[in-house]
Length: 255
Image (cartoon, rainbow, N blue to C red; front, top):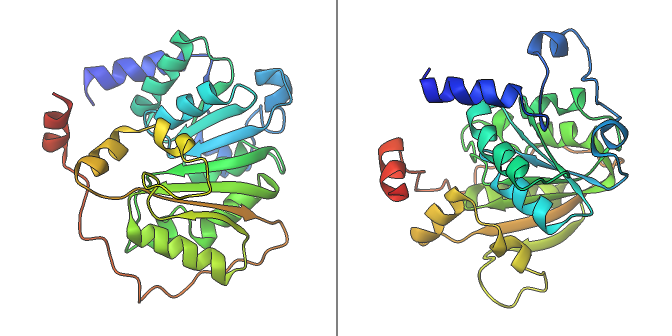
């Protein structure tokens, strides 16, 4: 592990807006101390809690917190070196409605109680075209989300992947989940949704896709507690024919 990563790990451990909980305790059935008490013990308000899953460097987490000061936004990612960027920015901007949790997404039930979360954002996840069990909009993961969301809590998916967009829309339609917005290109005109929210916060990966001429897609749907969710057949969904740039190319783009 590089010295830079080690330095970042040491720094986030001292940050008051970053939280971790050992996997050993999670596997033992223990819950994080703030579970069910985020409002009272950390944020000090009753504003809705919004999660960004797979938040990476936290661009969307921090961007949402800046835009919605009446909401509490928590970014979740397993990569501590990535979380460091967003947590540091939030601290420097003195944003009190931001926190980060370092854990696997499937463990969110150990960090949040039933009905504690109002909305979930999933921004540019790996589409996992060959591994449905790892796909963040699969039936398996929707069950994880339902355990912490309020009834009819909102899920936002923003993605470059036509495969994931198509799969997710097909899954929510076949399971009769209420679809609020289905936008195949957030930068095109004509949508009845306020797309300024979707275009004003732009992640590094989103910029990469736009440079390559790939459209950005968006789905917003609700997750009722009463819904019975099953996975779907996906043989007729074409795979994406492109990939993210490798590390060398990403470094060149940052110059």
